[in-house]
Image (cartoon, rainbow, N blue to C red; front, side, top):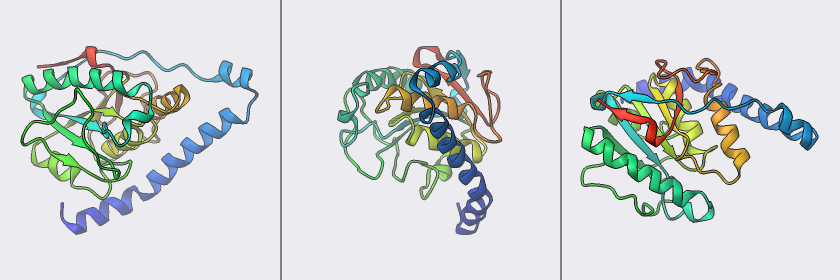
Length: 223
């Protein structure tokens, strides 16, 4: 993407990103300022993951920061890596694009994840669309939908899905490839993904264009 286009998109999305982060802070503050019992009762339920069927030719699977520099600190990361790998095999067989990110910490993919020759790696902060060439890669391959899984739940997956929606992509988030430091972190991430300012899908209706659908690796298929 040309420098002018990047600057224009950054200016346009600046206020939306501020609003997005502000809503996240407000949500966490509202929960933590209540008594524990009341907070647990008042927290809204997350809709169940739904089945989706995707066009492999216009879909990219984004495996975010599943690397040995980050993963060992999260107990749920090994099982998430196994789930992520199971979908990798099916995505490749169907012909979907696969992209990995390593975060700023770098590192190698955790087993059983393994990149094939030609599969790109992208760096950058939590929002992988920010200060990276991710959007350029997706545009050059005609991608319209991104499947997102990775860590930490309220880090790269949360902010990258928002970046994807801001850039016009439909996002499918894998609930079983969303390890967080605590269950609350994962809850906040899932809630926020379905309630993004301007891109909400509170009922988790499958594949609303330009919004997030919460799914699971065994519920994703390709045509």
